[in-house]
Length: 376
Image 1 (tube, rainbow, N blue to C red):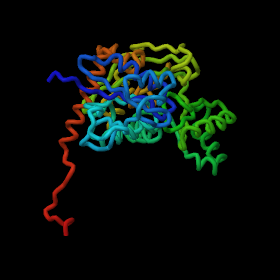
Image 2 (image 1 turned 30 degrees about the vertical axis):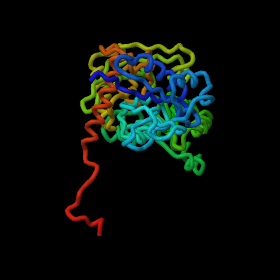
Image 3 (image 1 turned 45 degrees about the horizontal axis):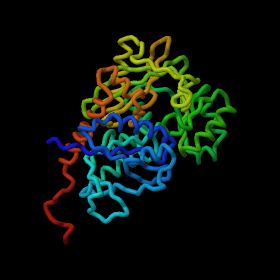
Image 4 (image 1 turned 45 degrees about the vertical axis):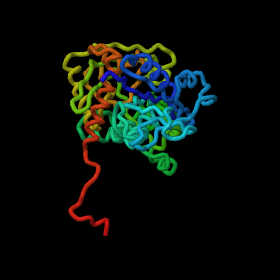
């Protein structure tokens, strides 16, 4: 009963948010209680190689990953549930059995359902959203279409594929100017940490920003820029009965909360809890939980909003299924302000992951027909 839980912390990855992931993983590994957990660090390089050792996080942060570290993999085999050293014979004691995985890969090939699908095949419990919610949460277009259907207030938007833009550039630009107008946000549909995102104020900027966004995705979303709005975030925690934290406000150092404002210049300010009327706080929390449920999310999510300064009208921006997880990131800080410490939050997320897995494995995965027709 007192045996430690072996937690595989996966970080890095083939993503524009690779560096952010390393910082999140550093905080999580430091905060996991060594009396409760045995930590197995698992780093994925920018080239997609899986590496695991006690030194892998330091090696990846210093840029020396892969020079001496051995390559290891999680196999899509639920009878193994191990991290396999590809240079060691099967069944070796060097294959640590993983009790649960904590994915800390932000963006593509980690937050988008691909890693979650592998872990489902491998039969390993993991923290956070499942395959569907991860995929939907990564795609800004699909999630907004679902939120529209659920009558969650969002800003006007339209989307298009890069192939359609190459064939009908003038038509799409005219449609954007007619339906959305300036200023507007131009975003790759599948990216995070504001990677590839721009704010366009005129046609010249719009043409440039679309080309820039298409470096990161084949699908582009253009959104109306809500004027005179505050950027508010809310954390959600739970499985079937999720709870919402107190909201927090971001005061960006730049015109909007871009990558530099988030991670580079250090001048953006967070205010937790956000100074909002009680009715607006309740509205944000209610919408955050609704959004969480609409995409069938589990474990955790950070939901981002805009609140107009004059009218206090609330618009949802997007949902993030693997939010930043440093000790000063908004997701854990909002829970800290709500009464849950960083280490307690990690404990709860691991508990929720195991709870979700235990419910899932009770479901039938086979069906016995009345007649063995397939044997004939």
